[in-house]
Structures are given as C-alpha cells and as structure tokens.
Image 1 (tube, one colour):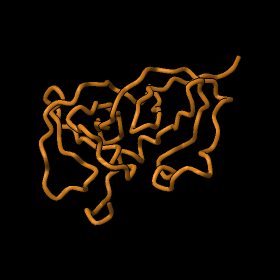
Image 2 (cartoon, rainbow, N blue to C red; image 1 turned 90 degrees about the horizontal axis):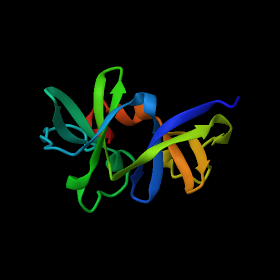
Image 3 (cartoon, rainbow, N blue to C red; image 1 turned 45 degrees about the vertical axis):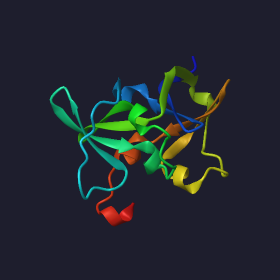
Image 4 (cartoon, helix red, strand yellow; image 1 turned 60 degrees about the vertical axis):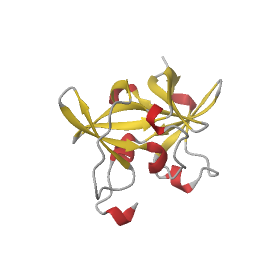
Length: 148
C-alpha cells in the first residue's frame, strides 16, 4: 500500500504551497495585529489567540515577495512549533490534499533562491506544482533585525 501524506494548501501570490496538516493547529481570519517595534520585517506583529500571544510572520516578506495588495485580508495559518504556536500570514487558504509519497520530488533547480531555502520539495498535483514549505524554517526568526 502506498504511503500518503496530507497537506493544508494555501496561496502566496500565484504560488501554491503546502504544510503538513500535522503541523497546522488551525486556520483563522486575520484579527487585529499589534505592531512590535524593532523586530525583523517578516514579523507583522502579535495577535491574541484566545488569550495566547502569537507572533504573526508574513510569509510574503519571509519569501522576499512584495506585500500583498490588501494585507489586512490575509489569513492566519497557526502552526505548531517547538517554541509554541506561530501565525503564518498567507493570501488564501485552499484545501487539504492527500498525496502519494511517490509524487514527491526535490525542489526544481529553477526555483528562486529566496524560496529554495524554505522549500523541502514539490508534489505534482492536477492543478500544478505544490511547493512543500519547511514550516520550522519559515517560522524561525533571525537573531538580529539586520539579517532580514
């Protein structure tokens, strides 16, 4: 029997990405973000998740993309990390897909270097390539502001 894996899929700009559903705590509509001074640009601020303070990481900025046309409409994918939950801000959430392990491939050589460091690999889907995000690296914050 072929091994399968499920991914929560989402969009950034025109790129389909996925995170293992095992790492996703929940998906919520963007609430109020409290800006924090002197943090790296990738951190939009903090959100209150039912009394728990969670950092909101803008994946567009993390992947060196331009800001979205309406960042206030971004969605939060709350990801479980060893340091607690982190919110990844994305343009749109698609659906959960189940893929065969055999469809997994290394990242294409043509992938932009800003994406390559955060992408584990790709799965070929009927609607195109789904880039598999390394959520641990995506949620990791640089030590100093100058690094971003």
